[in-house]
Structure formats: structure tokens, C-alpha cells
Image 1 (cartoon, rainbow, N blue to C red):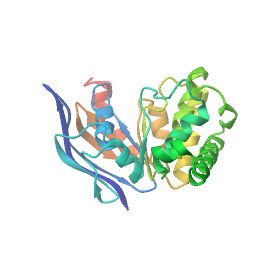
Image 2 (tube, rainbow, N blue to C red; image 1 turned 120 degrees about the horizontal axis):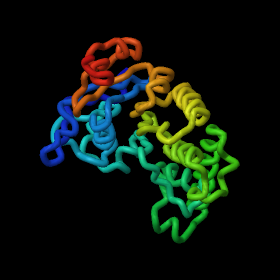
Image 3 (cartoon, helix red, strand yellow; image 1 turned 30 degrees about the horizontal axis):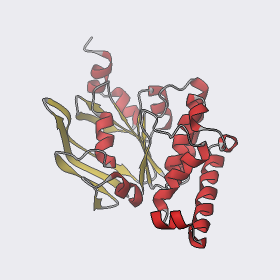
Length: 252
């Protein structure tokens, strides 16, 4: 079953064609990686999928609904969550509060209810906190719950951001360079977490430069070069693709 279908999307910034006529599918229940050299358009592609930028042309269909041009919070409410290449945590808030922010995308209480705090709003807030704690337990980071996010080590902050994305109850999780800045032990932990997330029934689409990680956890790999897709197959096939080899290793 196709969960996400991207058809001919393009994005230009002035004289730079960041993404050009890219099409691919993400099947439900897989881990799919998007790889490519620096400047290939990978993060721009994620911005187009998650609503942070609108494509110049092309369509993005999630669960057979067109989502291109929608606001990020609307796309998140449909079941598509993402993390970012550069951490976007609230440093003055605790780790738990940061994870709760992700769950609030599924909340029903509005601003007025939050100010007046009626019984229903208080019950919802307790439910949000418990779900946030569940995701932190799932990632083995609940002991960090009361710590200010800004005081945590970088790898711990990465894990908190991942828990926040999971708290939104996504069907599709977009991870933008999740291993960036991690050491070998933390990268191994990340690999295990991504596979456990997939085993929960959550589909994962990730951008990543760590090829050993990509080949270990991915079911499918798409390759971008100068904004265009040059390959899309299983990891072993992509590894042997002459054009992919040329892009990464050069003509010699």
C-alpha cells in the first residue's frame, strides 16, 4: 500500500533549481532513505513534503489526499511528523514539556480552555503528559523528563526531538539527518530505535549521510543529485548503480 506519493515536484530559489521534477513513492510499513551529496536538495524536499515550503509545481499525496501547499500543522494533524537537521527544541522547557508539545497537535482543548482550565481540559492535559511519558519510556529517556532541554547532551536532545515527533502519533515519520553529530554508540542506538519505530507500524522516511546506517536500516533508498532523482531501489541495487557510484566516487 502506498502511503506517500510524490509526483513531479519542483522548487526553485532564484537561479538555483533545488528540486527538479522529483517523483517517488513510500510504501506503508517501510524505512525509506533519501541520500545524495551536499546540495542535492534533500532538506528542501522534506520542507516541501511537510508544508514548510510550497512546491512551484507537482503534487504530494499522503493517504491519497493532496497536501502540497497546506500548513505544517495541518499536515501534522493528518499523521505526518518530522524532525529537523538543526534541533528545534525549547531549551528553557523540560524534556517532558517539549515532548508534550508534539502531543498537543492531537489535543482538542483550545486557548480559552487552556486559560480557564475546566475539568475536561485538565483531563486532556494529564492524558497528554502520560502519552509523552510513554514515548520517552519507549526511547529509554524518561529519566530526562524533568531536565531543561537546553542542559541535555546533544544526543539526548536528538532523542527528545524524536520522542516529540512520536507523540504526535504519526503514520509517517520524516527524519532529517537524525544521526548528525552522534557518536558511534548513539548512532547504533538510533538504528535500533528506528527499527523499533517501524515495527510499531510507523513508516519512516529519512535523509541521512551515514551510509552504513542507511544500508543497515533501510528497505528502500532514493538518491538525489542536483535536485533530481537518479536512483530508487533496494539498498543493494542502489549500491551497485553506476550513476550513484559516479556521483559519490567520481568518474575515475
